[in-house]
Length: 272
Ligand SMILES: Nc1ncnc2c1ncn2[C@@H]1O[C@H](COP(=O)(O)OP(=O)(O)OP(=O)(O)O)[C@@H](O)[C@H]1O
Ligand SMILES: [Mg+2]
Image (cartoon, rainbow, N blue to C red; front, side):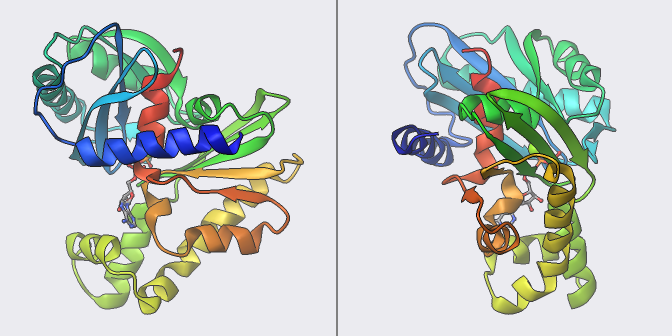
């Protein structure tokens, strides 16, 4: 992945951050593509134009997916419908179809069923970390998607995906650890985690992140990948990039400008 293209992706991610949940109508031309990321922590709907530029982004924090699997179908469908209504307002046209995504090793039909029940045709279906590998045009490397509930991994060699995996450790476990240590409710710990970058908090969370790097090491051990591409909201936590640098010396560690939005951008851009 060359520097110029990396800058393009980082700029798109910053634009998503700036437009998220903004319903102010935007004039768009040409075909659009919508991707839906049904996550453990949040559901994100993202629309991109034919050139892959984001035109609309809506995020709802949610509790309808657990460890990558849709648990509350009704809740998930209602959220997707709400996000589509907002998106319709934003882009000024009906949305009839979207790209569905799923964590590796889980049943793709959980996501497909939710989208269809929300009234959408499914344009394509892709596993989450592999969509990122494709968006980033990775020739050799591993994508590590640390989300709310799970860590997804996709290994690419000679431009081909050779392995995918998903393990149940993510941001939820970081929050639970902080909540336990500070004797505070989960919701309070979640806000503290996202807003306070103190060394004490980093020290409390470190064992969870070390578990994640152990998981990654196990999965990529037999592949000689030169680089690890981080994605997923949990990579926003301060110190994650440095930890990966320490744990994987000699490998390039690539952190995007807005890790929370890279996977949704990749899902929406899949097949463009
Ligand atoms: N600034 C931040 N610092 C630390 N963690 C953050 C920050 N912003 C978001 N997160 C965490 O990112 C997680 C959500 O990320 P993401 O949207 O990638 O997960 P998801 O797709 O919902 O989950 P999964 O992929 O595991 O199903 C949450 O656990 C949230 O606490
Ligand atoms: Mg995710």
